Amino acid sequence: MLELYHAEPRANSMKPLICLKEKGLDFVSHYVDLLRFEQHEPWFVKINANGQVPVLVHDGAAITESTVINEYLDEVFPEVPLRPADPLARARMRVWTKYVDEYFCPALSMIGWHIMVRRIAAAVPKHEFEKLLARIPLAEQRIKWATVAGDSFPEEQLADSRRRCGIAIGRMEETLKSGPWLAGDAYSLADVDIYSMVDSIPRLMPEHMNEAKTPRVMDWLARMNARPAVQAARAMPDKTPETLRQFGVEL
Amino acid sequence: MLELYHAEPRANSMKPLICLKEKGLDFVSHYVDLLRFEQHEPWFVKINANGQVPVLVHDGAAITESTVINEYLDEVFPEVPLRPADPLARARMRVWTKYVDEYFCPALSMIGWHIMVRRIAAAVPKHEFEKLLARIPLAEQRIKWATVAGDSFPEEQLADSRRRCGIAIGRMEETLKSGPWLAGDAYSLADVDIYSMVDSIPRLMPEHMNEAKTPRVMDWLARMNARPAVQAARAMPDKTPETLRQFGVEL
Image (cartoon, rainbow over all chains, first blue to last red; front, side, top):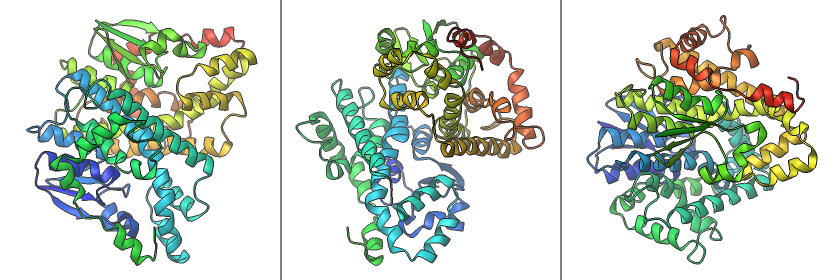
């Protein structure tokens, strides 16, 4: 049996959702509401001591880290392969998924936290927020929440994160000159993992991703959006608007 | 034919060196002297546009990123396997190698740069240093060099990096309670990749790694040091002392 603990179909939660849908695998979906701090509740920290989604549970064994989950799914359920068979193309795929995790996602995450998570931190009563903060397992996550509850990230850091997003999209455009997908001749986890991030860029940073500047990325995005598995992943529940409304936050 | 562009057997350069030696693979070694900025020279940037070592060249095709190189070597030369056959243990291996890249190595790197690279930055004449700085391909690396050429990292950041190193060693100690190796029943790339970082900790931060506090890590380190492949990797050239002497730097 497969179970996935995940939030709305966006960023790291979207990665395994697309992978599962591409492979046509049945799974039990457990929605974890990040804006209600469910990922830090004792029941969830028993599943992942880091207090982070997504987590895949396969026959009772937990696998953490979205990038690792997707490689695991491809190893255990290889019928619809999402990694190139050629080791060289597979290495290029891993350079991309690593780049997403180390460069692109942290930059994008800072911007997302600054725009949205900050509103939640401000909407929670202070004495309640202190208690929520105290139970966050990872020091780095505690600092991130405390930062957006305070003055948020310095403008210099936000500008650098926006710059990095532009670099990442430029790198995609360059790679797509050699073919329709990011790693080798076929659609792969490189496309899945980066799509889960890129999805929001045309809305958040249209200056970095548009028909004039990055036509190949726009074409790739349209092809990604047309995939039934991607559409199925995107149709998974998203409680964010409801939670924001209940916190009295308008975006 | 296998060729490896690498620096002294330490940190990210050590990772593929151990892997190649464990597998008994012949390779052409190309030493790149980082303290002489050879990694930013035009001939090298043609091999890796990021200007970073290590780079594996296999029959003319370049593979970058030490973690990716080691998985590639294990896929193409599986005779001496360094990844668990069990997908769950393999996922645990990848969580470790990812943790090294995203958490442990950046923390350790900051400390190493503060202690050693800073001396080099100070020893190069200013007008020459400006020219060296200008040709660094990655903005992040340019900032890092400029930082150590200036006031170096703030004490607060250095303290946080030392704290992270302690967390990483504590996590190793915890994992080694379940068995002699970090991922599953056998020695794997998790051990290879983390050893390449941990090696310097007893000297740099003995408070985090010692017989009293982390006996299992110390026992694991002794077993790692005893491996012929690890010894062969460590016996590879190290031009650091000579370069430092020529720059007039005493450590």
